[in-house]
Structures are given as structure tokens and as C-alpha cells.
Length: 261
Image (cartoon, rainbow, N blue to C red):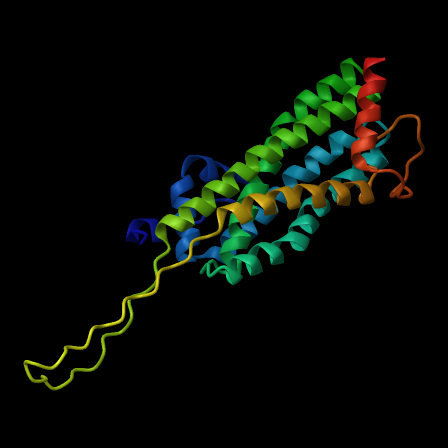
């Protein structure tokens, strides 16, 4: 259980919640396990994630126009949060089927921590992306570079998700069952009643979690392809959305071959 000092610790500024995630990871997981002020924590991470992804989205769209940059700044946070909304019910319900006591708020908080780390890492890479946009204005290279940044940030963020779920497995305990009422002593030769052993807690299913992470990645990439454009192709006019044709992976391969040719 969290100490009194931990429980009385003032809430961090929403934009600085990433510092707590990185510096006090165990304290964050324990707060989520205790469900202490978890709604405020989720709100802080939601705001931090939206702002960081929005700022990075501006960089993605700048290779086309300021209008495309504004569009990407709005659509990139929507992409991540909508992917979360689509995939979270499956994570919660499947763990519930396997006997995990993880609540929906705990699951949401842990996944939001992963998205917060992902968003802040993309923001940290934004100056590098902007540098190459200015100094080497090649659209294919710019697109491949930023796909690599998003992939790396996503992998690091999802590693925090795995860390949080593992911590939940170490602290979750099933409350001890109530003692049966006292009974009159039986004769010495009569068998004594044996109390039933408490049933074991089923931890978060880690194998299922890894499958869910892969599913999360596929849903995110397909949804990103549906909501495109995010990258501002300088040879195309501004468009809020484009027709759905092909798929993300074939387009990425085409961009790599165009960059190398």
C-alpha cells in the first residue's frame, strides 16, 4: 500500500506528468494499483499526450503548408486516442475472462501512460525532424524518417505498458475470505472441519498482452492510413482526407525505394 506521504503528494502539473512517469515509475504504478486519484492522473496524461502529439503533427504537415500542419496537429492525437478507444475493450474483457482483477480504469491509466511516453518522445524528436525538413527537403526521406520516429517512440511507450502490467501482477492480491462462524467443539474422534483454501488470483495474461500489442499496432497503422494525409506532400494540394486505396505498408515500401533510387 502507498505510504501517507505518497498519498498526500500534490498532483503534478499536467504537462510535467511525463517527468513523474520517467522518474518515479514504481510510484506511478502503485498509484494506479491503489486507484488513488486515478481520474486526475488519467486527465493529466490525456492532456499531455494530446499537446505533445499535436505539436509533432505540426512538423509532419509543414512540408506541405500551414493548413496541412494544422490538420495534422488535430488528427495525430485523434489517431492515437481513437486507436486506444477501439482496442481497450478487448484488453479489459479478455483479461476479465481469464480471471484478472484489473479494472477498466487501471487498464486505461496504464495504456495512457504508454501513450504519454510515446507522445513525449515524438515531441523530443520534433526538432530533428524539422532540421531535416529544412536542410534536406526530400519528401520520401522525410516520410521514412518520421515513420521510424513514430515506430521507435511506439516501441518504447509499449514497453512501459508491459512494465505496468507486470507490476500489477506483483501487487494484486485477492482479499482473504472471512472466517467461518465459531462452532461447538466436536468430539475428539470426529473429523475437524477444514477451512477452504482461498482461490488464487489470476494475473494479467502476459501472452495475451503481447498479442494485444500487435493488434494495437495493426489497428493504429490502418487507422492512420484511413485518416491520412499526415505528412505534407509538397506535390499535392491540401486535403483533409484522401481516398482509401492501397495500404500503409505498400506505401512505405514505395517511399523507401523512391528514396534509394
